[in-house]
Amino acid sequence: MHLWLQVLVNGILQGGILGISALAFSLQWGVMNLINLAHGTFQVLAAYLTVLILQHLGLDPLLAVPLVFIIFFLGGYLVQFFLINRVISTNLFMTLLLTYGMDFVLANLMILFFTADYKSINTPYANSSWQLFGLQFPIVRSVALLFLIVLSVLLWLFLEYSRPGRAIRATSMGTEPARLMGLKIPHVYALTFALSSGLAATGGVFFGLSNAFSPASGGPLTVGAFVVTILGGVGTSWGPLVGGLILGVLDAVGSVIFGPTYVNVITFGLLLVILVLRPNGVLGRAG
Amino acid sequence: MLVIRNLSAGYGDTQVLWDINMDIKEGEIVALIGVNGAGKTTLLKTLMGLVTPWSGSVTFRGQEVGGKDTYHMVKQGLNMTPQGRWLFAGMSVEDNLLTGAYLRRDKEIKQDLARIYRLFPRLGERKHQSAGTLSGGEQQMCALGRSLMSRPVLLLLDEMSLGLAPIVVDMLLDLVAEIRRQGTTVLLVEQDVEEALRRADRGYVLEGGRIVMSGTSSDLLSSEKLREAYLGL
Image 1 (spheres, rainbow over the protein chains, first blue to last red):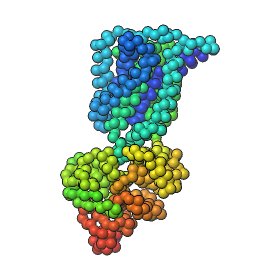
Image 2: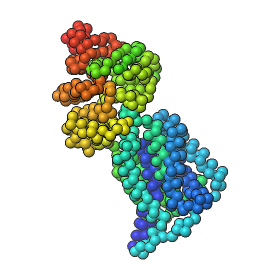
Image 3: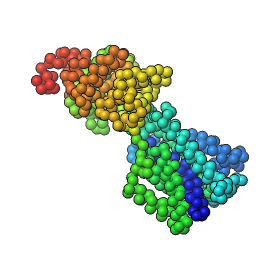
């Protein structure tokens, strides 16, 4: 019994990191119909940036989150405005090709600068846990889950009640009517990608704190975000939270029952079942 | 206010508009009539910058605006209520209206919102409902309200009557006079020739992408040619 409770806790906490990552992936997918294949590599880059910040500024990774967010926000704005906007209105294949290219270039630049070796971020709390009711709550993952909840609420408030948030929602429902309101679509898209990049980088900090990583770690992260987004439903505010928790728990439970080797089988089996039964995800699509 | 000279436009290789010449003066209600496929919507989209003109000029309040982007047109006070309404279906009625005022930075947006709800009490009752759940008539009111929220100088109304019950159409078309009274010039695009001309000062007839007739509403309504072609009399 106790073992299973601990497995459940592990799964739920793992859902935090998965969910933050999917928050970013789902936003750009829902608003721009953009599937960003470089998503995971962005996150790995954020993890490396966190290492640099720790080494050179001595800033603790958790305190560095706002700084990392802002850097990726600005970088994301430029990437969307000058690069992705050029092909976004052509077809899905072109954006897949472009983001795949970005992924390739970024991953290889990271090998050049950081070598292909595995790295981890060393903090005093990286491997410690809080004890509660005899259960272990790893600190980093617990904070990540807290972040996911707070970020989900903030993103929802932003999209629902702010002026730029309304512009993003309007654009997601149709670019031509949005243009008729006087919206500049390239800037709305750039803002959306900027936000996504900031969120992806935030997830990347937590990923780097709880896993060893190399420049090649991006692929599985992209796939994870993809599955969580499908599970929760594209473009919903709470989908990443729900999808993250579901996938986190299933992976944790599955790896105890079938062994860690079969985690991917569970993940993709679940994806197939969802796509057949509920193509819109568990929460469906807002709008 | 709006001067269109020798305007041609189209999509891809297909020319839709040929040498359009039109004038709209401040405070007027001008009707643009023509059958399906005559190019009415393309003309409006070209004026809004959604379609790029091939040649010719468009002057709005003394400024050349042909080929400028939609943002620029809206900023200048041009607005279009699109055919088929193009509402943001997943957003609430109120958010749709507020999006109409997106480029405004003044403090009177709240006041205008209240004004729209007074004009269309049904929208006020349903302001938190998502726009996709409204009836056809309510959706048209919402689209019209959304345009009015931008405080347009010149409003392009594209086939408000499409698919609506006659009583709703009457109510909406009657509002056009009220919109003019509040200082907005109106270009009324309709397939229903008689209804449109009864409310307009002047009219243009678009056929095969060309202006084939123009004149005051009473002249047009009594013209043999127009009565034969459009009213079946």
